[in-house]
Image 1 (cartoon, rainbow, N blue to C red):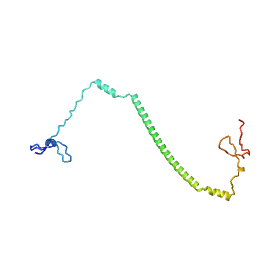
Image 2 (cartoon, rainbow, N blue to C red):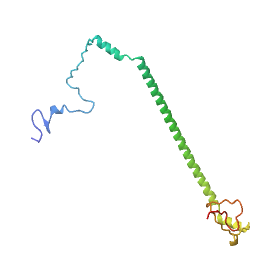
Image 3 (cartoon, helix red, strand yellow):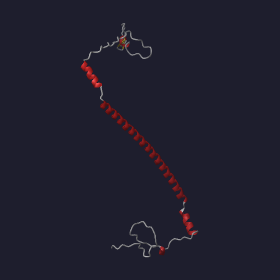
Image 4 (cartoon, helix red, strand yellow):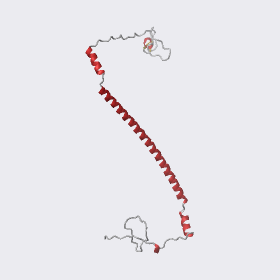
Amino acid sequence: MAAGYTSSRSRTTYGISNRIRSQMYVYGNVVTKPAYEPERRTKELERPRKTSRQVRKNRRKALHMSPGYVIFLAAAAILALVVCVNYVQLQSRLTNRSKAISAMQEELADMKEENNTRYNAVMDSVNLDEIRDKAQNELGMVYANSDQIVEYDNPASDYVKQYEDIPEDGILAQSDKK
């Protein structure tokens, strides 16, 4: 006798009897119907209870709405609708403005890139040695001598706009405060 097998009519395979094995779930489309049909319970129709006249009167009174309450509910519903519509319009405007700002920022970035490209092209085309050579040889320009250079004190700021000749002593303005 092998382990787990018996020679009796109800065979057991590793501790599972035929009766339990037949109740296990069978996968596929060839599952047989059970041999019995469960009883179905049907609800019996409940007969309406007789309610008192006072209860029926209270129920009708509870279902009745006064005209003031109806007007209040209608006004509240209209107000809620107006608020919702305004909110949706505000969201729509906000979205449109965000898109416009994004488009303008992209356009600004493109313009800056184009401006930088053109600036670099102009700066690359300028040769300072060639300009100095042309100014000295063709136009006769020379560097200033030490007696041509006038140094002056600027008491106001570092920015200078020259509207008239610089005085010989080199002082543009004097204050009386000492």
